[in-house]
Image 1 (tube, one colour):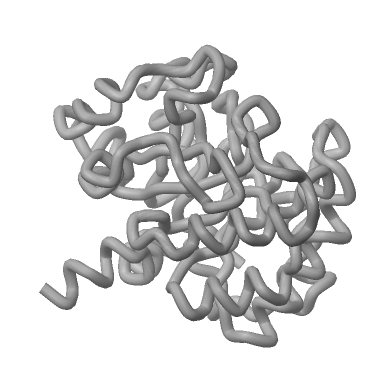
Image 2 (cartoon, rainbow, N blue to C red):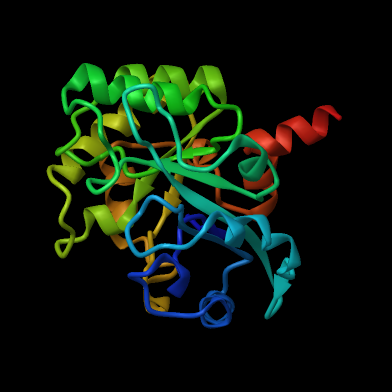
Amino acid sequence: MKIGIDTHTHTLVSGHAYNTLREMAAMAAEKGLEGLAVTDHAPQMPGSTHVYYFQNLRVVPRQMYGIRLLMGVELNIMDENGTVDLPDHVIEELDISIASIHTPCYKGEVTKDAVTGAYVGAMKNPRVDIIGHSDDGRFPADYGILARTAKETGTLLEVNNASLSPKGFRKNTRENAIKMLKECKKYGAMAVLGTDSHVDVSIADYTYAFEVLKAADFPEELVANTSVGKLESVLKRGRRRDRG
């Protein structure tokens, strides 16, 4: 399987990543990608940036080194309701958005019902395109409900390569990713592969993500980012534009 665009990457702006936007784009081109989504952490992540950064992303060229750039955000899910940490009007102007639970930011209960509710609430937000690294066993979730809601809302569920790495710090990620993919296959929900790169050399490395796709016997047609065009056509914002 060929992945056309890496949908989850971070630059220096996130505060704990190590490369500039140009360095990330240049590496994406070197590795043969069609596109790159730059999804820096939203403001509630310690060390990240201000809302003004996201409001000003319109000035960034969407072509660089011959690849398509999607300038977006990784939002923080803050509570059981799925509240995120940028205003709707700011998210609406971006090219792509991921919503994830991070330990420094999430203030809700850490029970399966509460965490599942947090993800469902975020998926019901028409501006949230992707749920990031829901494989983290520290935040237990009902993957059947997630997959069914993803299908109903047109949200993509992420297979996060960094989560699956032996160097990763999230818990039970391989087992949970396989469960999630099997539920996605059952309901016809689409998945997306992201590297969650915080350094340029990790871009386009899907070693562990491909392993869980194989283990779940997951069909390529349900992988959203095999090309830039396919991804843009299934993002919530892309479908809204198509409807005109």
